[in-house]
Length: 242
Image (cartoon, rainbow, N blue to C red; front, side, top):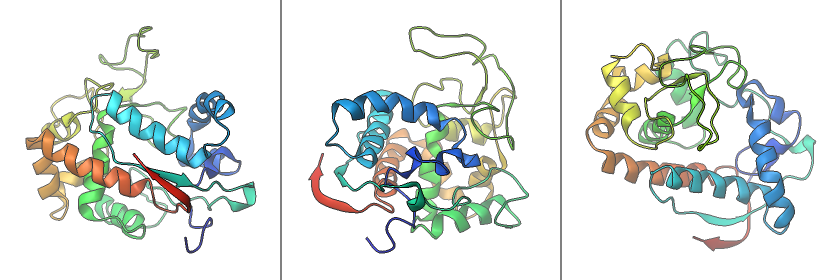
């Protein structure tokens, strides 16, 4: 892999400071700590593979598509091998990379990674799950402290209350993100400028409309884009496909 590991990507570097402390990674230290016992039990599995396996299984277990994965990623070994801060997108202007519009910003960030407009829109659909919390998403776009969809704890699902979600069923992976962003009909659901751009930009719009109309189409394209993303910046030592 050329430029490994400084190009960043799927190399396990997020377990190190300073990367875990980057603004766009706020709150992810908790996720890394949840994986630590699994890593301890399976030391032969790289951090990079473990994180990518977790992402694919999470999508599938929440009702999303099965994502084709190959394993054998090599981990970085020291904090000095972490990528610089600023490689991830912001959600609203002023953007740290100085683009004038949300669509231009998304393209600048993701096209340089080799992702297409279709990949950008499909991957955005992952916001069908999850919530925005000020303490876990950085200070730029904290969203509402609580909504009618996030007001209660759910002990059976291990969720706490609070935050603002993009969809009403924010523990289910579906095409609801596209349906709800297109409608903009519920003030309790989050629509950031980078979300709205998917239906406003002429390059993104055909894909966003396609996914709002068909969950099957979204799942097919999302699975391919997720698999592609999971290999960016990765160096493989041997390979196992699942």
